[in-house]
Length: 485
Image 1 (spheres, rainbow, N blue to C red):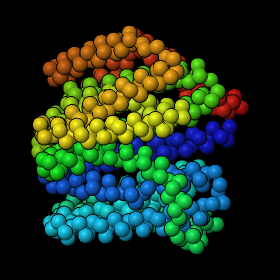
Image 2: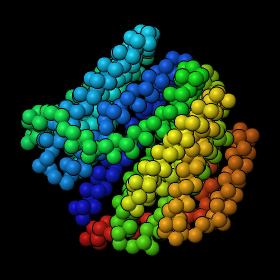
Image 3: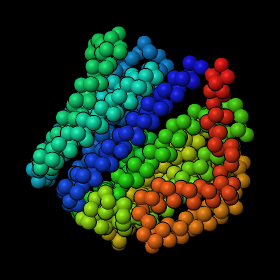
Image 4: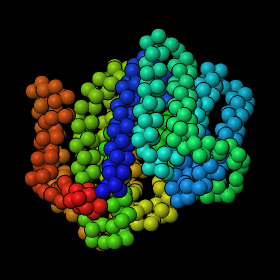
């Protein structure tokens, strides 16, 4: 019972904090984009992209490694924190020095250079917060991680909105955002020293450790590939087409990231189940995978279809008329949502099956493909080329992972389910088009009519079985024991 309560507390606190964070950030990005316009917002997004890529070196997979090692051996916590802080600080200072040297040599415009330095500074501060946060994760004190997420979001969004209300320039807005990250770091430090006073003297281990870097290298590789895959399109758009394109693309991308909170929370709960069943029962693993796969595929279809049909209304509601080109981007990227939702299940299943090496190799290959396609398609199609490249690369990954897992687990492809799902999607498109012509407000169509119509058809065609509704209850045996107790 205690184990289940801990699991439930951790999952719910993280889930609620992530939803809270995404909600606030979507609102802030919408206000910021309207205030700045596509060009200035594109400059901001481009600087964020450059810093995100540089942070691959600064983070170097240390956050994930710390959680694993501290969970295995609590006595090493002081040593790990001290060494990780020294390594990150060293890499951060070297990165800032590198930015400064490059800016001087390339004669970068002063405002752009200042934005880069400020964003790099507060990103590095957030990286230091992550080290302290690793202690909360390793000791399963997720409520404090949730507190940091929510407090940081309030600092960030509250400060940013206040700066916009005062009609501050982009540089001043970014400076205020930097202060929010410093406040978050201070709060993390206060919580850390109050909850873990026995680790307060970690500074005695403040030194470089090659062995720790070597241990973190695999995590750095996998995490780095993910960051490169995510940010390649915006970087190449900024270099090849200009900041306006980055602004249109980044505005749409922020909406997509908000949608992905659904599969993220789902796989957070289901990953331990996959791992346990891989050891105990392959037949139960097949059932859990199939139910999870079609559940997220069904969710991806409804989110993608509604985004496609109402793309103009969604973009204009969020960003106003200055982002008309984002409507075209959302129309194309809406289809990307359909297969990317179940891809979350595929990725977690690969890791549960101890296929991390293959997953890393394949993910790295598709990242290289994504870079090549972005270069070619942006040259040919402009900013829409980035959409086509992302769709092709992720779609190819979806096909490979789905085929591999089905073959590995001896699962037959259920072609009839795909046909039924396609028919349900086409019917949903027809219903939404009809409600739009009848003058029904699109919010009613998205949040009431679309779910009722679509999931009624999904249940009628038995695309999702009854077992799916009980998947978490069936997959967590200690939950049932706790309930009976």
